[in-house]
Amino acid sequence: MKFTVLNQLPDGFFSAHPTELINIFDGPTLVHLDYGREQTIFISVMLHGNEHSGFYAVKKYLEQLRERDEKPNRNISLLIGNVQAAAQNARFLDGQKDLNRIWSNGESQEELWAQKVYAEMQTKNLFVTLDLHNNTGKNPHYCAVTNLDSSTLQLASLFDGNVLYFSDPKEVFSNYFSTLCPCLTVEAGQSGDPEGIEKTVSLINRVQETNKLDDIGDILRIFHEKKIFESFGKIKIPRESSISFCDEKADFNFLPEIENLNFNSISPGYVFGRANNIKQHLLVFDSNNNSISGSYFKYVGNEIISIEEFYPAMITTNAKIVHQDCLCYLLREIDL
Ligand SMILES: [Zn+2]
Image 1 (tube, protein in one colour):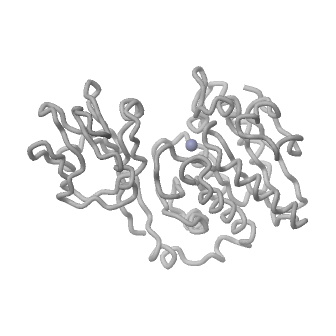
Image 2 (cartoon, rainbow, N blue to C red):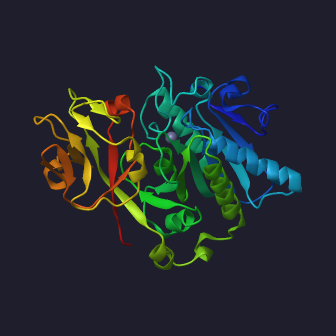
Image 3 (cartoon, rainbow, N blue to C red):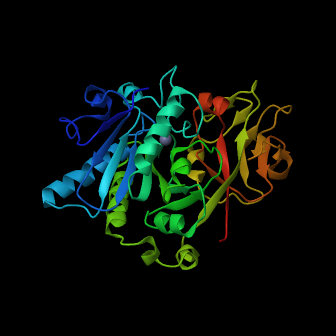
């Protein structure tokens, strides 16, 4: 995997559709935009090729600077991610690795490339890192952190949305760079969602306007109003079972609008779905892959009834993804 560094955006960047970035970038590319400032903000977009909002947000931010003839308070280094996958509107292509699972000290060509990006960015005086993503399903806008340090939470408070803390998987971009500076992952709704793009542009502006993260204030006060969730498990279905989100009869049936439950509290007694095959139950796992199925659901007739409060997130209504990964993640609210 070629390590490409540029010192300016190539011609055509501002007019390109994400699927056309392959025509102006060879592959994943690091672009340093030096405005003669002391500190640098590092922003990565499209580590997943089909998640375009980050690209649009950065483009819009840079266009606004140009229109106002303004110089930002910090230099910007931009990592343009998987342009090959973007050309096919895919997260990543067959034979490629997921570019948000390669940030570790391994030996694969992708991991060696990730280490070069890290070494290069280590020479910059980094203020913060922002990693811009989208969700496949319908979720409220949220940002994610891989630690609960004050500076990281102060940064998270600049984004208009929920905050999610997760520690697994570890090989994600933001976790790797958190040894250099506070890092934030943004999940700005579904790809191209205009409100998510606006919120991301506002985040970049707020970061640029913030002198020191400590100026944002005490995190206990900030998070008195704002919720922090922790991901602690996931719901899967048995491999051989069928699942449906419409009226068609399957082993597991859920309402088509189940995605509206994302980040909403599921109280004990709530009918989460229906199980039509008495032999099959939902499989609930904690972060260590231990089964916690019996603590979360009971089965009365064909109803799947919740026992313990939780918040589902990243629910997918795509049966293939349910089989490959999971139906949803489980969150709980945490107190600082
Ligand atoms: Zn992503």
